[in-house]
Image (cartoon, rainbow, N blue to C red; front, side):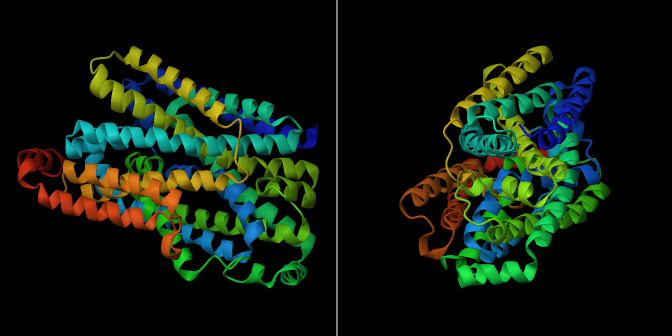
Length: 487
């Protein structure tokens, strides 16, 4: 075991545990376990809001899987990855003030709380909770795999042992600290991600030299330095449509949307718009460029998900590599903790408290939340034991499924008062159903990313069914408007 690499990672993990124990004091002292554990009592400032959004969105696919695909596809994948630049700005611009004001008014703790108040439909709530549980399990499995592969590459432990170590590390601080622990550790992790990206990009450029790297890539395959990718599959239509998945559609991701209801003030939200956009842009550019440059510096890597740890060990002093590799570990952990809390809240808050035992005591809710979070972690561990070769595809599949389910019930529900429960149901069912069918039988139809057509189908379903069922929901819509929009 290379202790020069391992020790910085151990220090990083220990600091995360300290934050978890600090946050657990707020959980114990809070008058409302639900608001503190799942939303941090809505006290995020601008910098923390920006960094928790960056850290939640920047995941194993950004630091492990994405650079691995860039290694195979070339500079065209860097161009595609940069479609993520305006993601944080777009999310906070679309949801931002309106979503936060409505969420505070109805005392929403989760995204499904908003959907429940907006549509007043048990079926919408249950369908939404099931969508979160199913698709976020896939997303969490991808993060578990990424963390385990990173630890495996650095320590020489077996994959299963590395997976166990990673799972225990995450579960401890999430279980004891809740959302506040997640937000604070996300801030630490976001800073580490930013500087880790800077150091590894500089190290790779120095090791190979930009001119030499470009010459080597061109000599191997001229398409590696074209905008269309090594196999010419990155057409303008595909790259443009990909922005729906990683740009516009991110508004529909529950783990991102919940951030838009957790900030403290409008000033903090505006500051987060700027900071988040700059940091996301730099991280995405730096990590994916490093993945491409690594092909010239360290050719012949067969498993794309090992590119980042191997290039760090190749171009940096061992002790510095250990510090830098805390960045992908931070990215992975920051996404996992958010997803764990989100699925736990779907089970406890959105299903159990709404429809099983609404009068459960605060202590019972606390025990159940901690228990559910632990069980979820164990189940994901089991799922991650046999991982795919490139975890980015598992992660992107989950993204697409969640977006197909939630983007229109959330956005149209917020901005179009005529939308109703029947429209939301139709949107979720057609969105998720068509996404699974297209993904299985006709991926990337007409040269577009698979999520595009399901998103369009779900939008049409939402609008058409809502318009056809206006009279059926008149009474409910009047109550919704009075409760959510009127002062």
